[in-house]
Length: 185
Image 1: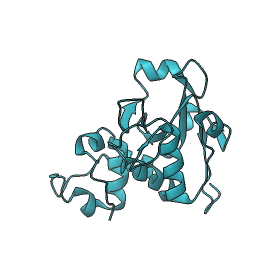
Image 2: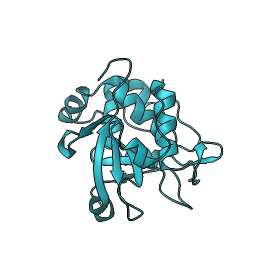
Image 3: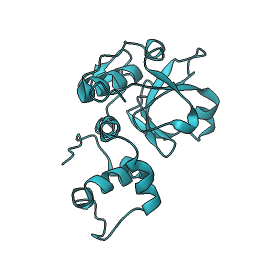
Image 4: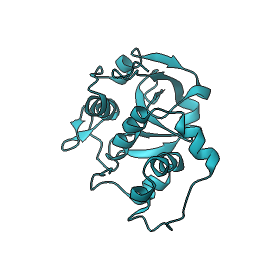
């Protein structure tokens, strides 16, 4: 059973139907319980089959990141208690999920793993943006369905956003895949 932090909000979870499909495909009864969805609720078969190709481990990264929704932004922050910046969020999720230690800044993280083309993005991949007039100044974790989770900026909280928004489209710098040390994929 997946446990979400108190900061988790159903409205944020439902913003990412792709992850709901993954959760429902792997744990339908547990996913439906407590969400007020009918017992016979099921996402479209095409959605389920599309996301079954992703490894469970990559889904763990995305789901762990979602458990941090609502944690406040803090520049240089690297714990949920003190707050998280974008790279602090990414580092924490990969350390706690896979035991992988990543560099401290978004720019340094952009040099780790393998390059991924936009059309090959999978949940758990890292997406990079130019938000400070320099490349790779912001990082988030791709969730699927063209959505990503990130810790935005001062006054913000960890949240899910669409990469289809003009702001993010215009600032997209690329994506990287960190290979799971347990599987090498």
